Length: 143
Image (cartoon, rainbow, N blue to C red; front, side):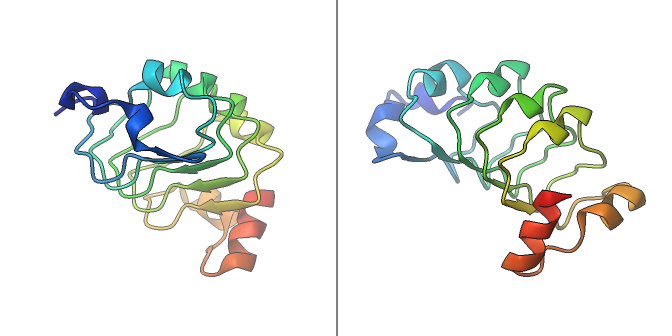
């Protein structure tokens, strides 16, 4: 399966309040158009999939407040990732990220950021910090 909608199921059926759980869905790509049609879904879990890239139109999902992209194969984030200005919680644990886009600095509302288990550029890794507990993840997000 490539897209969440291709099962014949509807993303709306997976929506629980404001949370949309697409983890463990064997996704190779993000169903951005379907997600854009669900502005109520402010919490999106895309963990444990096979995502290697995010399309640039993903950055139009500005309603997202919490985003879990952990345990994928992401090598980079779109250049305009900073458009996700409402993000408060971002989990990028266990991907293949080396750098972050410059626009990342626009994520002023970020309170939680986990970059553990990524082959980050040493300078970036030092700035980001360890994120071993809630306090450290908050400091990481601030930096």
